[in-house]
Length: 218
Ligand code: SAH
Image (tube, rainbow, N blue to C red; front, side):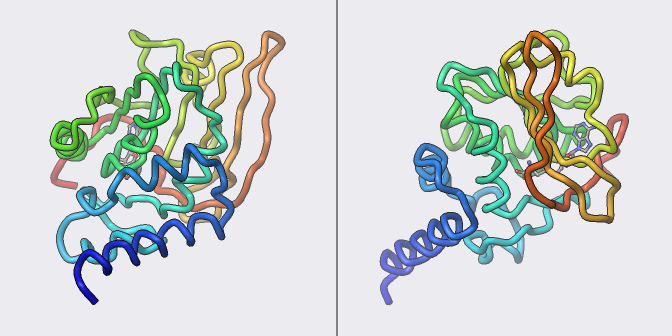
């Protein structure tokens, strides 16, 4: 098989896996077709970039499984004019998908190394509507708040209060909730003028949301 055929075949299998796991939103599928997961994975796992599996990245973290990225993105119901906050940049892959669907994306990680490497890929891929910051995202980004959508890609025991407060009325936040090292629940929080509504979406497994900045030697 030639190289081009090989790539086309892998892409087809990648999209097929997403659809069969319930990613059906056309805009989300198009975004995931346009953003190549390859550049976000380094080292000897690079050749597994198109498998529907989570993979290790630097600083002891993981890049999420593509179908989970798709399902979380779909659950956010992003509108083209939205400003989105992602807590947990990691490899930057999820932020890159969000950048295709929203007007502006702010993404934060507690590890300087992860934020810096992700920002370099965004520049290289011309994803100019993403702002990458190093911060403890459990406090949100008060200077840029409020947000139309918030996505947390690390598990907290409860939805962090500052993130709930930084959600616009009519806004949606998707996050895994539960203890680390166990199965957690993916939750969707919708803010209305009367308060917050909670939906439980599916079981997931994420690395924990950790307080404070990370040391890059970790
Ligand atoms: N969305 C990522 C995967 C996230 S892994 C991707 O597409 O690759 C979870 C990330 O959350 C890790 O990089 C971890 O450093 C980060 N994280 C954990 N606690 C955090 C906190 N309090 N603030 C910001 N980032 C945090």
